[in-house]
Length: 117
Image (tube, rainbow, N blue to C red; front, side, top):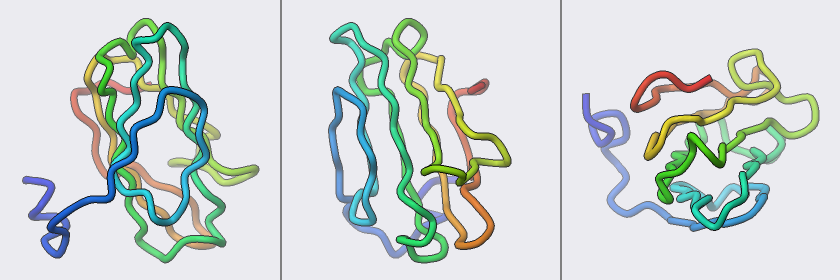
């Protein structure tokens, strides 16, 4: 199933490129992480109280070195991702799609390629 089959109403995604630790905001959609400069990155999801139900983030290893310089995704404070405090991307050029539900948490919709720890 293609991404646009999941989200057919999106025509253009708001893209953000990051090279250092970042806390996302509601307006972010597609986040390209580049750790090729030699440092790992932590991407913090916004508080669930600040998002609309079903908010989706796509996070991509654009630098292609996640196996060396990991990309860590964390929830804000006590917010969890599939019940965990963090997800670590360790596969080069991998991506993950995450959605949020108020009062429930963040959930992984899909990843490519597998595995992401």
